[in-house]
Amino acid sequence: MPELNFTGLMSNQQDQNPNLYNWNRVYMRYCDGASFTGDVEEVDHDNNLYFRGARVFDAIVEELMSIGMKDAQNVLLSGCSAGGLASILNCDKFRGFFPQNTRVKCVSDAGYFPHVKDLSGEYRFEQYFDKIVTLHGSTKALPSECTSNMNPGLCFYPDFAMPYINTPIFIVNSAYDTWQVSNMFATNESDPKGEFTKCKNDLNECSTTQLKRLQDFRSDFLGSVSSVTKSSTEGMFINTCYTHCQTDQSTWFGNATSKLDDKTIAEGVDDWFYDKSEFQKTDTEHVDPHYC
Image 1: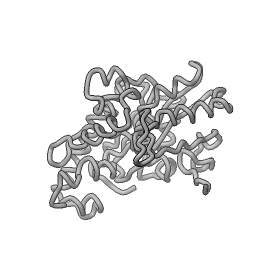
Image 2: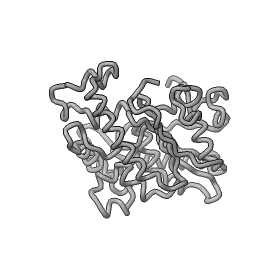
Image 3: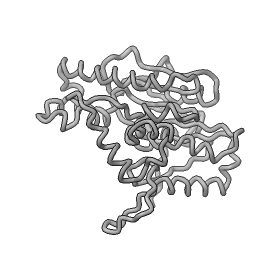
């Protein structure tokens, strides 16, 4: 297997990652598409598929604990995109592996998938999460207080899951996340004539009306994320960069265009992780999306 090039939050270079460069780092691979929540006993023999992401997560963590992680004083669970969602949904379970005196927190990068309407005013993305939860048997991995009150598929959304998660979480996200814009907002189903296609692929192609629609998406996103980050234990870095995933690239540390209140994502996470200060920042300077 070729070596992975760790960058951003995972970098071992002090100039790129000044606060975490000398930590032990582990990359947890997965391929089930359900953010480590799958737990189905039956095997899909036709395709030789096992939907057991939750068991994979447990096995990896248990092995790491056996070779020294149990003695760690500071532990951070993080991920990007579906991995960012995994860091939210598995945050309490991960915390449960460690003694109470261990500092354990979670950082979700581009994993806050908001429960918002698409261009046509529908919640079509609900169907996607419903199918994931059903196929992977994910209900048992989601907060029981959530699944007992609503359709388990909704509990895959951070909007509904995070109120029942006790371990501190830091949300790193763009209010104009490119994946979310393309797959949750301006989808092919909600834009059958493809009128939004050029705009979502190139901001320079957006009309005034389309930019206004994107601003509406931003407003919906901010309303969603602000509802679950009211506690001072939660952190938040929400900028307006038109991108997807920011902790694994230059925007993590040193990119001036992605800073909030003159702080990089790395500095904000550091303040929050070590309880130096609360950090809940949103880009209020830029209303429109921009490239960082």
